[in-house]
Structures are given as structure tokens and as C-alpha cells.
Image (cartoon, rainbow, N blue to C red; front, side, top):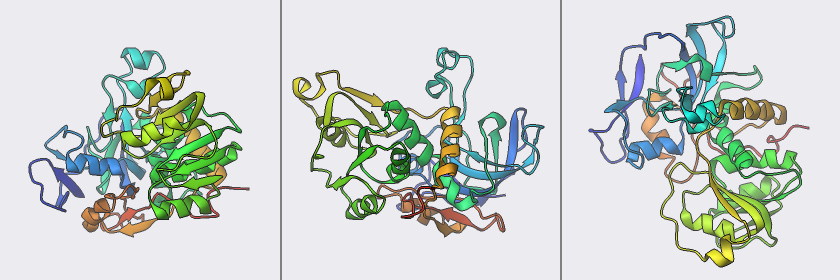
Length: 351
């Protein structure tokens, strides 16, 4: 099969991946073999390629936002030909303290799709059957892939922040997850306050109906009940903290964060304000979010690349954004899909 390979030992400027023919994965117990229909490009993939996240193996097929069709290993619950989604969390040990106490996202021995095991920048991928999510027919291949990472982890961030219907919620940064999460917040009747650096992101937030939109250095006009930060910046976390009421929560949606600057405990954290990190996701998060995304008709924009252009698609993650790598159903050998993270205005919510 054709695949895009990342090698920790062979890197050149702008060349993250090399297209090669490699053996097709062999079926293992408890797994299914998928023919890749589409695979998303995430900023996490760029963190891996640029060394922000240490390599776990010498060579790797990245990609953890996968839509595929089961071609081997089908079961009664997952028949052959079933179209499924796969996300970053590709497996857990099921035996550690965290798995035994309902916190599988914190598993001591997790499997990460496209990081600790090969992912979906390829024609075929082998995945654990119990970490796949059957997809409704109405959710097409190209547009569902960004939901499988940016969407799910954004949804988990809302849960970690403890957001309740009708609250004032700040979104700090408005790239991948935030532009998908806003539809969820609006369905919960929340007021959404967006602070972000990029002018195009501010325009997008306005078009999607944010209550207030401002530059990253501008404080929202009201105290916030909750906030979620999406930029990989400690400075942004402190800015969100300054905007909270007493008892408020900041959830950090970042797998990699630069250094947290010093801040005044008495002024910013005292008063039972909280800072919480968002670590991975649970399978129930994925099921709940995909169901809600289907109901709300959340549909990101998408750009299609060939698999041969995987480096170009990955390079587009350099500004904070989300791309989708994948193969179109008609020709899985030659097609790569890159989807931006912003939903189309007017299609983010159902009636």
C-alpha cells in the first residue's frame, strides 16, 4: 500500500514525510483493518513532525482523524463494509487504576493513533475494534474527519470546564476546536465571548454568532463563568484566568503548551478559581459528540489534497489550524483530504 512515512532520522526543512510503498497491515485479534476513506491533518501531527513531541518509534505513519471502511475483521457488531471513525485515543490497557476508576483518558499504557501506532496517512490502517465509532450515512467522509479530533477534544474541554446551560463562556483562540465548539455552546444557550489574535478568526467568530469578539489582549466586557483556551500559550491561560469570576474554571485545550508566565495568586487564582488541563478523550466523549454534531449538522469546510501532497497539507498547520488528511472513497490510492477547522457560516447548527 502507499503511505506517508515520518522518519525521526531523516528530516529536511519543509519535508516532514516521504511517500513510500509499504506492506499492508496484517489483521490481529481484537482489531479491524480499514480501507482509509479520509484522514485529517491535525496540529498535533505537526508537533510530532517538528519534534515538540518526542518520537516513540523510528518510522511512523501519522494521522489520527480517520474515516475508513472495514475490509477485514468484521464482527456481528461491526459488519464488513461498516464505515467508522477513529480518533487520537486508539486503545487503553483496561487494567490500570485509571481505567478501573472511569478515567480511561488517563490510562497508564494508552495507545495513540498515528503516534504510538501507525495511523491513517495511508491506504489501509489497522485499529482496535473497540475504539471505532460507526458513522451515520449523512456525515460524509471529507467533512466528518475534523470532528474526530478537534471536535471531540473541544467537546471534552467544555465538559472539563463544567459548563452549564446559559453561562458566560470565553473561548481564547479560535482555531480548530473552538470554531466547532461554538455551535455546541449556542445549543446550550450560552453567551460566547471570543478573544483571539487572528483577524480572520475574529471575523469567523462574528459570522458564527459569538456574543462578543475581541483581540487576544482585550479583556471580555463581563466576568466569565468558564473559559477554554485553545492557543498553545501560557500567556493566553493567564489572560483567561483574569477574565473569570470567583469560582470560575479555565480548561486548557492543548497537548503542548509553552511556559506559563508568573501571575499573582491573590488577584487571579484566589477565590476558588481553577485551572484544569484537558488530557485526551474518552470513548463516551466521542459517541456523545458525534451524536450531537449529527443533530446540529456541524459541517467544517474542507480542502482536498492528494496523498502525494501530504507535506503541503501538513505545512498548512503552521498557523493554528486544522487540516484533514484522507483518501476519497473513489480512489484511496491518490487522494488526501485537508479540511480547515472553521465551520461554514450557516451550517453549524440545525433547526
